[in-house]
Image 1 (tube, rainbow, N blue to C red):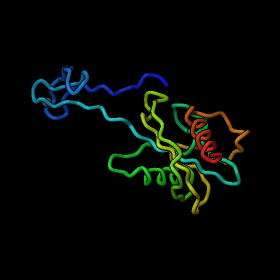
Image 2 (image 1 turned 180 degrees about the horizontal axis):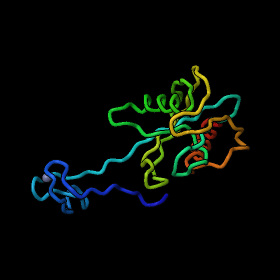
Image 3 (image 1 turned 180 degrees about the vertical axis):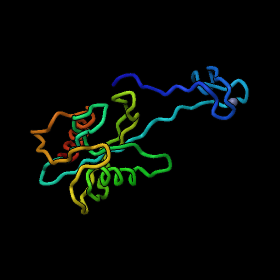
Length: 171
Ligand SMILES: [Zn+2]
């Protein structure tokens, strides 16, 4: 996995002064020389869903960059203050039109695939409760695919998650 991109911040969000870099709490961090506020970069957390029907896997086609036109599992960022389980059900509904509930936890993956991507990805198996399959939000197509005939994938993590789920099925 490539180097972790951490957002830079230049001004104090408390008092507006330019920040300096200072060694504190174990590493070099932006710190305000005026009021003493220290910037701790937080990881971005995302959730992804493995939804299967008749051994086929539900994928969504990305309508926006990065990786526009390529396919991925239904996924999205966890909002601050949002339970990851709520976040994944919300993303499934927004992107695929399906209402779902969480099954097993497949894996927690660390590592950013692109500069705007998440640092930590939580992958759940999701069960379909109802709804009608239709693309929405930042997705322009949704479809089920056989494992041996997947379309071009946007992210390496998709294969990792599929592999992990398969290992769990076999053990
Ligand atoms: Zn300040």
